[in-house]
Structures are given as C-alpha cells and as structure tokens.
Amino acid sequence: MIHSFGRLSSGQAAPDAAREGEGAAKTGEGMLETAATVSDFRALTEPARKAARILAIAPASQRNDALRAAAGSLRLRAADILVANARDVAASRASAAFIDRLTLTPARIEAMARGLEAIALLPDPVGRILSEWTRPNGLAIRRVATPLGVIGMIYESRPNVGADAAGLCIKSGNAVILRGGSESHHSARCIQESIRIGLEQAGLPGACVQNVPDTDRAHVSAMLGAAGEIDMIIPRGGKSLVERVQREARVPVLAHADGLCHTYVHEKADFAMARAIVANAKMRRPGICGATETLLIDRHIAPDLLPLLIQDLHSLGCAVMGDDTARGIVPDLEPATSDHFATEWLDARLCVAVVEGVDEALAHIARYGSGHTEAIVTGDAAAAERFLNGTDSAVVMWNASTQFCDGGEFGFGAEIGIATGKIHARGPVGLEQLTTFRYEVRGTGQTRP
Image (cartoon, rainbow, N blue to C red):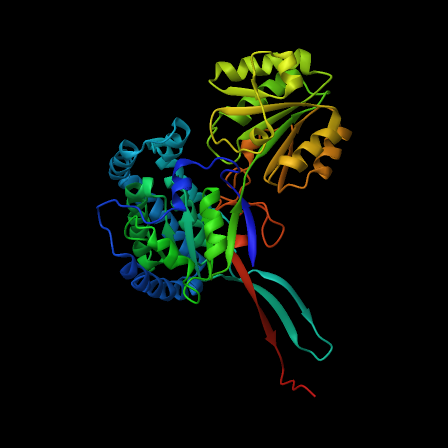
C-alpha cells in the first residue's frame, strides 16, 4: 500500500533531499561499515518493538505525562540543542532558504516544547470506538482504533520534524525510529535525547523514540528492508529520497509526492487582501511545503494589480518569473517556462501566469499541481465554491494564505506530513491517521452453524 504525501520538490530538490538518494556519506565520525549497519539494525528495532507493546497499552495519562516531561526537558536542554544546531549550520553549504529550515532559535525550541504540550491536550486517538453494531445472532462487534506499532521516519533537515513526529507517535501509542537529514544530525540527536529523558521520567521506555546512531545512509536501506520489524515507513524529503523509498521499500510506505501550491487571485478579489495574502503565502517562509510557488491572476485585473503584487514581492527579496502575458504587463519579469511552472522552488522564487477565469485557473492547477494546497482570493462566493469544488487537492482555501496548511494551524497539535494521496490520509497527518483498527467481537456463547 503506497499513499502519497506532498513535500519537497518536483523539479528541484532541496540540497539535503537531493543527496539522500546517493550512496553512503563519508562523515568520518561515528561511521559503521555498511554490512554491519544493516545487520545491526535490530539493535534499534528489537527494543522499539518491545517499547511499542508497552506504549500501546499505557494509559493516556502516562503518555501525556511523557509529552509534558519531554517538553520540559527540551526547555532545560535548550542551550545544548542550540550548540548542536550551530555545529550543523556551520557545516552546511546550502541555500539561504535551506539554512532557514535547518536553523533553530530559542523561539523555535520553545515552539517545539509547546507543540508537545499541545499534543498532550488533544483527545486520545487510541481505543476510540470507530463504529459498533449487533448482528441478528447477538454478536456485538466494534471497530476500535489501535496503534500501528513501530514507525520508521526518514526526513529532511528540519530538526523540529523529529520532535513533532516523536510527539505524535508517543500520543498515538507508536514507537518511532528517526533518521533525519545528515545536515541536522547533531541537532536531531540532542532533541531525541531530550525526549528520551521525558519518556523515562514518565515511566515509559526510552526506546519508544530512537535516532539512528550516525549519518551512514546504509541505515536507510536497513529501514526499507525491515519487514516485520517496522510497520510503516514515512519519508519526508526530496523527490530523489521519496522515489528511492517507493522503489526499494519492503515495508508499507506513507510516501511524500511533489508539493506545489498555487494562489489564484480572482477578478473579484479585494486588492489589499490579495496583496497581503500573496506576500505571506510566498515569503513568510519560502522554504516550507505550504509556500505558494505559482501565482495565478485573472486577466481582467492583472494590468492594475499585478505590478503592485510584483512590487511587494521584489521588496521582500523574491525573484519573479512570468508567462508572456504577465511579462507584457511587467516587462522586466524573467520568462517562465513549463519546467518552471512544474518546479517547487522552496526558495524566494515565484512563477506568475495570467488566466481567464476560474476554469482556466483550475486547468493550470490540474496540469502542474501536485494535489497539495491551492487558494483562491475573491469576494465572489459562487466563484469560490466553483474553485473549491473543482480543485482535486488535499487542501483548498478561500481568502487565506496557503501557509496555513499545517497540522498545528488545523488544531492537530503537530503533523507528521501533508498527505496528497486519496487513500487513508489527506492533508495534514495527525494522530488519527497514525492509528489502524481491530475488530472486537463479544458473544454470549454463539457457535457458527
């Protein structure tokens, strides 16, 4: 079973993600021989499976205590985390947008801690009665939510992803083995150690949350081949990584596809609102998956509004490329090709296309989009409904920035990914999507004729 998430790049992967699909890195530090790495991977999976069994039957109060203790541990060890992160940042040679994804600050560490506390406040997803009925023979049947077991998480170099994934897995009763990007290795290990302390303070096994011990990419091969030891793999990274996981995995995969978001400014849009939304959707954090990569603007308002939007974007340091019609209005725009419209930049770059109405906007999205997040800016309710109903994406928005596509913003506490597939999970993936179910059948002595 392969599901599809939307994250990194269609035409241009982020630096770490592009390297994830290559052979083993040579860090010279804590490295293991490839064969030993694969054969010794059970040193992680065996304690993870034992921990998962304990975590699955732990009461919600204990799992919540672990999350709150982990949050406190993150705060107490914030200085150590910042030192580890500075080491990662100093070694990086990536783009400014990628460095932004990699960098931790006191505020971002506090946000991680608050995220864990927010997860603790959410309803318990384990043990929910999803449905129940009684058969004519008197058998009472329930479908009940249960943890998946052991999750393998392979992710790009945003260190907070590890904390979010750990928090969601603890709450949903799953153990997790984390393999972060090599550029964030020191940060990830320090964060994981903080969470382990919280787990043990609450009386739960530290092995509920583990990191692979070093940056050897053989760990990825080991995770992908760990059928029977890992119950699901979640890759969250660039296109080369995701393709490798889908090609090689012997474990069920909840996989990331390309992520490419659009904002369409309709002819009935309020200009001030459109300017605020477009600037935020692209430039609040251009390196995240919810950043708008293509601006679609209605032909009727483009001559008046497009120069203002371009002015706003340029003032924020965004490079803008346009189709022929857009360049006819703003001549100094770089030309945008079909390949550009199919690229998720994850950087301060944006493509612009001028379209004739909602249907043409939808056709553009259908051609180039990845099913992640699309937005329309308009004061026309009928046009908005036509757009919302006509967009085959996981998340569609009306008069809001695409950067609101986020588990925290949706009230999930955090997210482990943005699902763009149509099976099992769509949009921000939170606690409920990290459970499966079992059937419980209660009888009074019935036998089958």
